[in-house]
Image 1: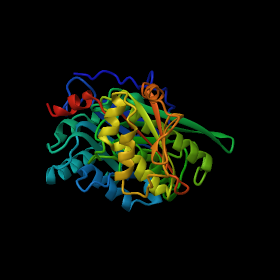
Image 2: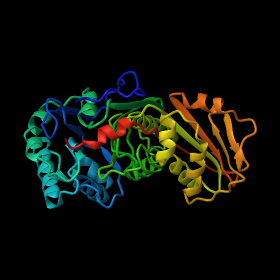
Image 3: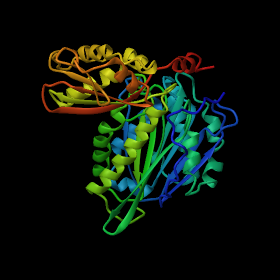
Amino acid sequence: MALPRSPLAPAEFPQLPQIDGLRFASAAAGVKYKARTDVMLAVMDPGTTVAGVFTRSATRSAPVRDCQDKLAAATDAASDAGAAILVNSGNSNAFTGHHGQTSVAEITSAVAAATGITADRVFTASTGVIGEPLPHDRIIAKIDALNSGLSGDAIAGAAEAITTTDTFPKGAKAEVEIDGKTVSIAGIAKGSGMVAPDMATMLVYIFTDAKVALSNLQKMLSEICDRTFNCITVDSDTSTSDSLMLCATGASGVDATGNTAFAAALEEVMLDLSHQVVRDGEGATKFVEIQISGAASDADAKVHGLAIANSPLVKTAIAGEDPNWGRVVMAIGKSGAAADRDLLSISFGDVLVAEKGWVAPSYKEELGAAEMKKQEITIKVDLGLGDGTATVWTCDLTHQYITINADYRS
């Protein structure tokens, strides 16, 4: 049964720009779901460079390991072969032993045969239930139809096909002027639960018609990822399947290698997509931004921010609209990063709640309660120790999260 659309969802899926040198198709293969699309294929022309970041989970899936191996061996010359990405939902092909490797090999070989792209440039991803063999024959049966149905304007269908417990498909875009020409960026993502990235989050695919050298593309992606996807959390659980890939077709003829405006536009897209994942957190009713300042270092600031964002007690208090600042104090104290009780201050929005080791003299409970009733909430913490800062994003934790996950495999 379809889940109700998140109250934090955007009004509609955005109209994403067509990226020259890129085509999509999607199909219903019946991997798990019935009567809905669950496989997407993206094919890119020769000249495309590909970068990626992936989960660092020790139990990462067979598709993740395959993509990592292929990208580790890639050179700029590899772009001459083009590239293809095939993604299925409903089954993560994780913790499936040699069966997982066989499935990846069979799928990549079939895509290579259909598209003419060499198998070492075919990347796959799977998302869904862990520990069940992937029925890859159902996917392979759809590959010829996917290949013949490729279209430059089919990205919305691709975004829909990769969803699992998502209540809406996620897309974002940006355009930037470089040397008098317009460069486009379009991205899609899926993610709703099992979100505490240790690289990126869930599945994310971003495409641009800019030309970008491979080494710069990878460096830029990794750096921006740490400020966007690696700063979100829904439930503190890192997926076995997290994959983020960035593909630059070069079809615009504009070289964006090392271009700061292009990097800023890419960060805009990645931040937008990462926030959409949080807004679609399983059972979420509140979007929460946690701003940390005055930490001993940026790294410490991030540790504090994630400790607050991942605390079930903080998240349930937010769900109940309870301005329980003591739970924020608790999360700071347990984080392991440097903190001093008598130096830190806590605010909900612009309401100063606590300072100097005690509740702020100006604080009134009704002011904090009013902040907690908002759909978008900001928690600010100043550690008073140094110049370290970080911002992380999360959502509340509601009964619906348990409902969704208690019978996920049924």
